[in-house]
Length: 155
Ligand SMILES: Cc1cc2nc3c(=O)[nH]c(=O)nc-3n(C[C@H](O)[C@H](O)[C@H](O)COP(=O)(O)O)c2cc1C
Image (cartoon, rainbow, N blue to C red; front, side):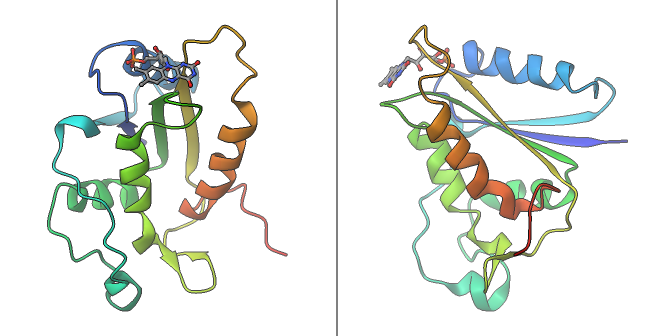
């Protein structure tokens, strides 16, 4: 069975961003997949301390709720990063979690995860023009390719 992890970076557990993430799952044709959704705002997730222990140990030494998320991401076929646009960017809740993904980045900017994961970013916004923040989120998406998306190119 396929496994999909949603990281919901909205402070609102069941509003627009959560609804969009659900629609995204439906749209992937993975309705039968096992979906694990994390409401980041309600979790104990501290910011990355920049200690670099993960570079040596391969795991983050901070014992908080990210430990479970790490395992789920490692075993997932797909990861959905869901966020409202806050001040032209992803929410702070999601950015905090994204910073904590450093253990998956090996020296040389290679991924420690198996390749083949699908990575999606689901964005809600107030502004009517849906193209307005596209460049920013394309940039974020390119940065997240290190999670093992099959769109990673080597050069
Ligand atoms: C602090 C804050 C900053 C926001 N910044 C933007 C923004 O820069 N551009 C935009 O289009 N919408 C912005 N919005 C609107 C939210 O992106 C929008 O309401 C979103 O759909 C809310 O998702 P939610 O229902 O999951 O909370 C902002 C909202 C808040 C509260």
